[in-house]
Amino acid sequence: MRLMIVGQLEGYISLAGKIALQKGAKVIHCDDTEEALGALLNGKGADVVMCDVKQKIGPFVTALEENRIAIPVVACGIGSDARTAVKAIQDGAKEYIPLPPDAELIAAVLEAVTQEENTMIANDDVMKNVLKLADKIAPSEATVLITGESGTGKEVMSRYMHRKSKRKDGPFIAVNCAAIPENLLESELFGHEKGAFTGAAGRRIGKFEEANNGTILLDEVSEMHPLLQAKLLRAIQEKEITRIGSNDPVKVNVRILATSNRDLEQSVQKGEFREDLYFRLNVVNIRLPALRERPGDIIPLAKFFSDKYAEANGVAKKKLSKPAEQKLAAYNWRGNIRELENTMHRAILMSLEDEMEADAIHLQDSSFTASTSSSAAAPGKAPDPAGVGKASSAPSVKNSGAVESLIGRTIADVERDMIIDTLGHCLGNRTHAANILGISIRTLRNKLAQYKDEGIDIPAASGGGI
Image (cartoon, rainbow, N blue to C red; front, side, top):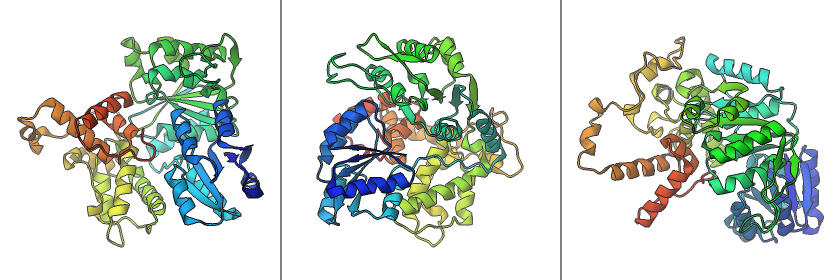
């Protein structure tokens, strides 16, 4: 873990840094938030920032967001002044640590705020085979393309492979190619020089340089503009990048992992994705199965998420009742692991019994739970990845009366309700909702802006939302 310390606090915050060093963290120190922001923009990466509460935390957090730097900030202050702690949280800090520091408290907080979604649960034979392949490939330098439906855990697999690689002590940098506007993605990847374009007030080191001697994940690489694809291809081939506004190439030593929830071969055939780049990225392909193809993992994953969100929300952990397990196992999980995670987050908050009851588990629509899903979840029955002999996961129009409920409504109205309902289902997380809906984050943002202008209430963005 990389820790950035900001401020002094009479030497106490330095003591906190020493404790973090003893816990295996790599620590850098900055005198104030301006120096810290400059260091981050110039490639001094960090996984968490521990900041003196007397520093300008609010403007610092805002500056991080404006520069698309996703790093949690932990505020530190002498004593335990509740008002100071509350203000720091309101300004955007994830946690508040009173000083002088307690070693166990600091270790727990740092672990909590930097917790990576990298737990690999693989009880099902289908997933065990995938992990065997990942374990075999991870120590190599091969570029890997990780594919699968939205919500199957492609970034989790990427982090797993990084931890298993020879580069595990180097940085792991993830870039969501779908979430960053096209005109900013090149700067995000390759960096820019001062004055390279309007608003470029100083040099910025790109993600490729930041990931030097480590791993870079190009998440949803299929969303990248064709012109930028050509520059990415050159960076892979030549192992060097050129910042925007500069003519001087910079050598980079990175391993590239890429993910896509689209069929890239079809994208190549349609001319949407470069064939030469596809073959460069697809040296090894790891396909993650949909959750319905690995039924043996549904209940273990549900228990994992239930415990995780019980702890996060300060409520008691609960066992799953048999009816709850049966309800989870029979569902089709179109949103895969991400949908299961959101479902269990709601369930642990709504459960009223000593054991989690089935009624606490709110599923999207019973019509999505096809009878074939139950058979797919039956022990001993092999999954059918291609979907042969399987009913469609779409709702049965004939049985659900869906057509009758839509008569008299415009397509725009139906689309709006679908988007708002899905966003609510995802607890306001824009990225998750866009993945479930099968649209880009850019399209979702535009739709939400339109609905907001029309006076429609939009679910607030949750942590991790965009």
